[in-house]
Amino acid sequence: MPVGASLKPMSVIDWQRLIQEIGVTGAVTCQPVSGGSINQCYRLQTATWTGFVKLNERDRLGMFIAEAEALHQLALTQTLRVPAVLGHGTLDDHSFLVLEWLPLANRLANWQALGEQLARLHQTPAGLDFGWDRENTIGSTPQINTWHRDWVTFFQEQRLGYQLQLAQAQGFVPTGSERLLDRLPQFFRSYTPIPALVHGDLWRGNVGFLTTGEPVIFDPALYVGDREVDLALTELFGGFAPEFYRAYHATYPLDPGYQERKILYNLYHVLNHFNLFGSGYRIQAEQMIRQLLN
Image: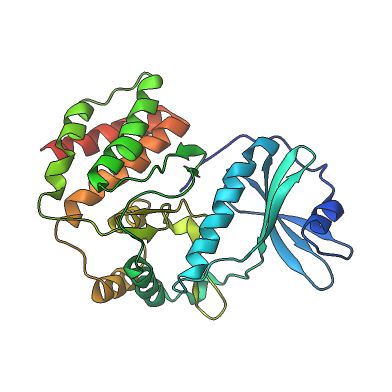
């Protein structure tokens, strides 16, 4: 998700020590690269090895541990390519996560493969409950993942309700928000979500394609949820290519009620943007609530 953070400069880190922490040897060079605005990101390279490194403040190590575990769980499904985790830890004032370097060539994007593979991920059995074994983050906001058997309760308390509490702490109580929370069960009268492993932050910036066209997903905010949350977010920030949606629907058709529920699910992310960045998202959140209550 497009998010921002103000980080202290981290140019003083000893890159040689960092690669030694993960068992890599050789003289290392460092190049800053883009990778979102939550972390500072770098390409590290020796004569025989290349890695992608995320840095943050030392106390954010838990965020990297959760991301590493999420990537591991996604890899185990053997459905979508994710970067391999090479190590994580702390060094002086920093926490770090090291991933394999994947050269991307998005002009060769195979959107059809992405749609088919995401559908297969969502079809992978994920148990009976909704949640995850650890808390993680959506952007830099904590994401609570306590297990629940009931999806409506989970989403009401740990997704939408939690973001509304954060907004209220900043003085924003969207008109109709309490009524919307009370009415949540109505959106699921004829639809029972099947627990699915979801990426959780599947916007365009968290998808790439290798030089072969193979899709890659990264920066997960993983949990077991309703698969529709992933599809909804793909539509929030400009959308994916039409081939993606055709392939997904052909592999794993969506319930007709998705068209209404996607507004509900994306409200979670719009509220999160308000909580991260302030008033610029206030009007959009209130418009979405009005849509859902009409």
